[in-house]
Length: 215
Image 1 (cartoon, one colour):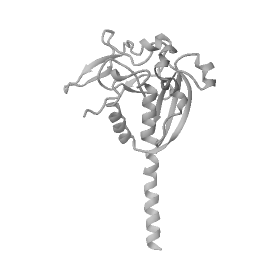
Image 2 (cartoon, rainbow, N blue to C red):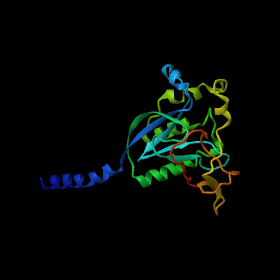
Image 3 (cartoon, rainbow, N blue to C red):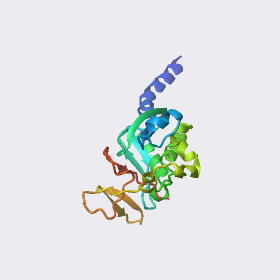
Image 4 (cartoon, rainbow, N blue to C red):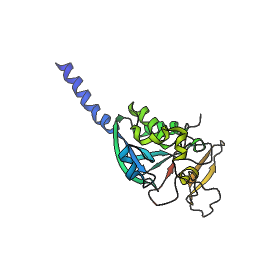
């Protein structure tokens, strides 16, 4: 009996730590075009999505450089996009520090210059993240347009095809001592080398870029 009570006590002592590492994985979906309000009823639309974990949202966008295109924002506040809905994907037990390392490793696989609207877009990123974290992907309707392949190019508005990279006065390109690069926030008004991951229209939360783990 004494041994059994000791075991239960030990289990109870560890549970607060276990609970502090628990977090829900949520997919936040945004509209890229107003037309979604009509086409979504047919399971079709042009969407951006981000993965929310530990109170921050992570997405993937394009820039011209061979390093991380993964960024984080306040949940449901991705600049320039219209928030549509949130979809719970499950819960994980992962400390914040461990999750940050996980995201930095994933970021090394998602460089800004590898972004492709059809084959490697923001929804491919969130689907990959969801699979790695929970063992299941995002709902198929979120990225259905890309799954139609090259046919999508005929349907997408030209602005979405050519304005993936935009100027943003708050960010500049920096080169680190090891030769790697990053986009960092700055107060400079010089816009020649500034790149924006998202569409320039509208306003929203502050975008922070995730530095990748160099291999």
